[in-house]
Length: 227
Ligand SMILES: Nc1ncnc2c1ncn2[C@@H]1O[C@H](COP(=O)(O)OP(=O)(O)OP(=O)(O)O)[C@@H](O)[C@H]1O
Image 1 (cartoon, helix red, strand yellow):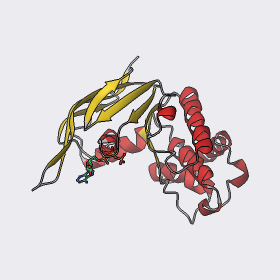
Image 2 (cartoon, helix red, strand yellow):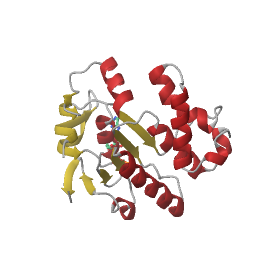
Image 3 (cartoon, helix red, strand yellow):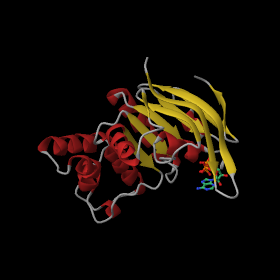
Image 4 (cartoon, protein in one colour):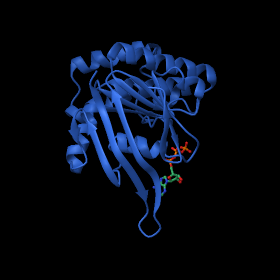
């Protein structure tokens, strides 16, 4: 199978005067349609790695290939376009806009990309709402639904533009264990159905074990994989 994403010799150093190296020579490739978990102790470099994968931050050295394209030399605008077209994000703190309804929130990435909302987009949003089980609350304000529902809304939002890569940074970090299980099962279902590639940071080993592959980051190094 083709690699949708490749990291080659990635190093990351923070700081100008006082330099701290947090990633050391990371080499990883991700096959299309796979579900990957990233685990590791607090401070090991998981979020730093995720930000580089998501093109939100640049590596200090090394190369990142997204769908065969080397992004290391792309400018800000090119990166933003690539990000909008290829990558969906699900964060622990979902960042739904409180003044907007569930449906409106889910349509935001589409609106940003196309500057309008078509009937097809509305249909897709409604399909996604059904898949994540939010039909009854789709016209509620984002603040007027539960934490688990907010997280499911964030998942639907990450899917509206059909991204080929979906990144999650502790997407279930603030949920109880039962809701965590439900949300993970949903992510895996979406992975099977839409064939998107998932890369998800989790602290929960039980959850990580459901992935096709577990990547462990230890002190900024790719410690071991079971790929
Ligand atoms: N902008 C920054 N400037 C300087 N140091 C940073 C910056 N961001 C992160 N760090 C440091 O880099 C290291 C890795 O941080 P990172 O957030 O990637 O770890 P993590 O594995 O995601 O941790 P956690 O599980 O606690 O979220 C930490 O020592 C952190 O303090």
